[in-house]
Image (cartoon, rainbow, N blue to C red; front, top):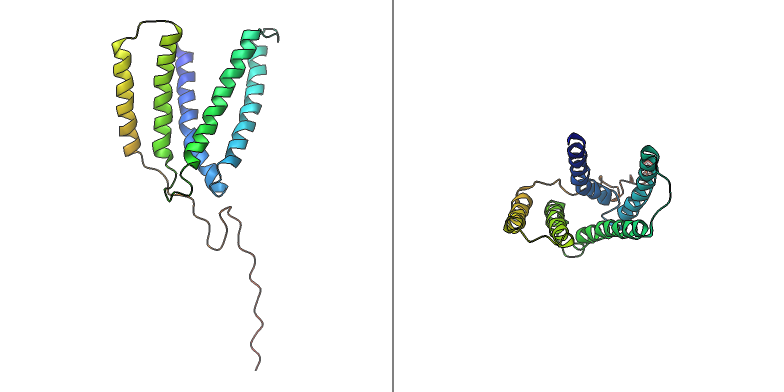
Length: 182
């Protein structure tokens, strides 16, 4: 049971640092959320292809896919991509409102909701009876989201360097003024 737990903890580590890294990417791009989203898509593609091929090679299976595997794999990938898009939109929705994006609030909502939805979806898929403790856990998760979100510090927004723009570009060199004539 050691490896699944290690990989689950690593997933939590990667996904837990995803929001803050996304915030840094947005700040570097003048708070435009769609440039980082494009890079997220490229990263997903690169790592999914490399990881998929490596895993297939490691497990020594052929490259033939079932129609169900193709369909559900594409649906799962689309759900992940749509999740990344809606996360981007959750951060973008603050623009023009005078409210700064709040990853410290958005990320706990995202991950807490994901845990609850995953549990409820699994219960429906397996046609299991809804256990009252599941509902207690969902309510507990909602309470924990509020506690975590309301007590998480976050970094100050990126401020451009003096005279530079929001991309960190330094100001153009000043044109020297001629010496005064006497």
